[in-house]
Image (cartoon, rainbow over all chains, first blue to last red; front, side, top):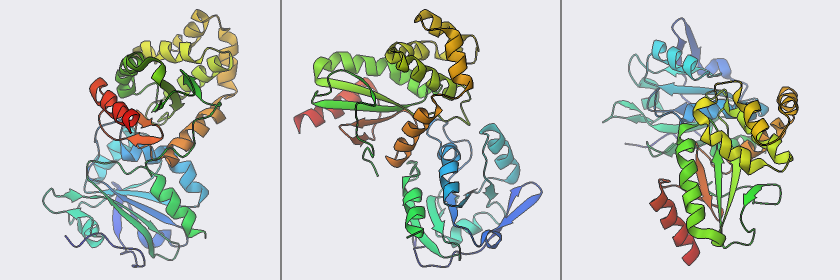
Length: 155
Length: 176
């Protein structure tokens, strides 16, 4: 694998379903910092759940005016059920058809397993990647790196 | 990323000697089943080390997933303001499966001779929310990624938290 996209790279645009009847494209978020959190699957074990953690930290992300988008290869209906169950307050994009195409564009697709890697990107208001991080698939990377990257954007 | 960002201080809830050679910090959620499982293990670890270990509990409620975690955390803080943090902390974990019962927290207050009406007032006015939030923020900044998360002398413990694993990690710290 070539590895995930690195700081300084223009973030590849995407246009993905975030609900059964709504799509979100990266360029719609231009003007604000964006956090892209690729993750393997909805419904992973509960207490160490990365998306549940980010949901709690969302107010801190918002202090930086940042938008958070979770991305996995799960379909829109799966995301909808998962988001509802976990009471998530941010969009989950479905990299479902063609499967994993956005994850691949970011270098964040696990070919053997057939799902997204656990990869984080902080993109600035002009659409340039400013920080990226690839976590081992079984390790929830937490939120500290994201917060630090958002802080660094303001410097 | 894996170090405690806010050092243990007098503001913390601590059991044991502040000068003990080892301090174990837990970030926990009262509604989290894994924290419920860790509760008796920590007790055993404390017993095992006696005076050589002090234990600190900090709040890390995942409030969107665990709707009863925040009121439980604020209830423990309320008890703490009345000198009974650990009594309440223990009672909540021992009654974790009843957290959804709205009678539970006032009932526990009563058991500890704290006025249930005062507790409900404190929960209503969110008197202890800032304290819980400040613990949560310090956890996020320390790289807490789920609950329970343990720190041994300020270093995150990344392994499992069964008795043997915690003892092994603490022994390692004590020897170094």
